[in-house]
Length: 358
Image (cartoon, rainbow, N blue to C red; front, side, top):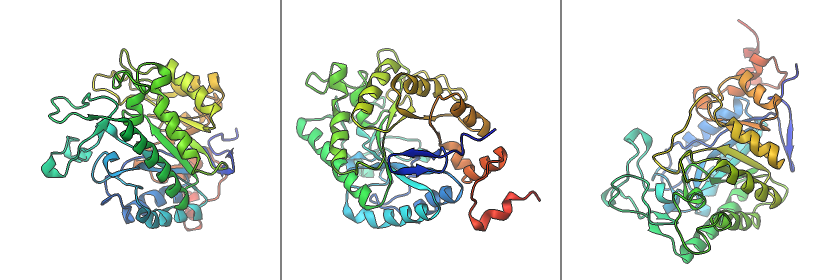
């Protein structure tokens, strides 16, 4: 049987050599937003390892948009030089470099996960967070987020626009807007985080307004022939929150407005979410969006085996399969899956002898 996982997929002017996508995963290893050799080796090794598309971690469009002080950023032209080195290497390995643009909103100003993910104090160089409403995410937060003014919203839109220009200058070929996992755009989408009474809150049309305005601003800087992705949380997994019906409606609108792929994750908006974590637990979200809207979708979440990914694609539940933690465990996930599925691919010449059994 011909492997679907190792079939080509053309999206606009970009041809992906397979359907394996390295999901954006924060490394918490930058200084003042600048990439370094850790990011080069981390992302470059996944390109050597056979993935078709490598999407860089959530990259902050402003300093206050970082999850932690160690996040990557693209709020300055000075950030471009090292990022361009990374994209250049990925391209030499016949893989496609992508970038996820993000703003953490009320989930910003925290420590890395190995420091128990806690809010930073002012003495630890923490900063005032922003959100659609002054509702804290963390319990007993002595410094709740600041409710964003119209000027704050305008600045965020401009920051995404400027970041898109820099992303193109840095030679990324896919741009993804992060509207999931309880970060700023998702905070506007979810009624659990957004109790505004102006044109950015209340109705579905108002809650999606910021995402659509960011998307339109980004499109003025991002070339029409390069793919535009949006990552969403398909559901908040919490009563009264963002749900799958709203995700389907949003995906229809995104398709009409020129988005090429909806990358379907879930959760992250609130602490009291109840996520039924099982292998492939988010695939039904991806499948429903794909079948009801016709947009390309990406499946992510506890997809860890080659044949499991093949099944998702053969059942037409998604067009791409995103690998996160599994690709941390296995940088050569593309090569190993090809070996397992007996797919005929071009290996890096330095690794060709690994195709032979010892």
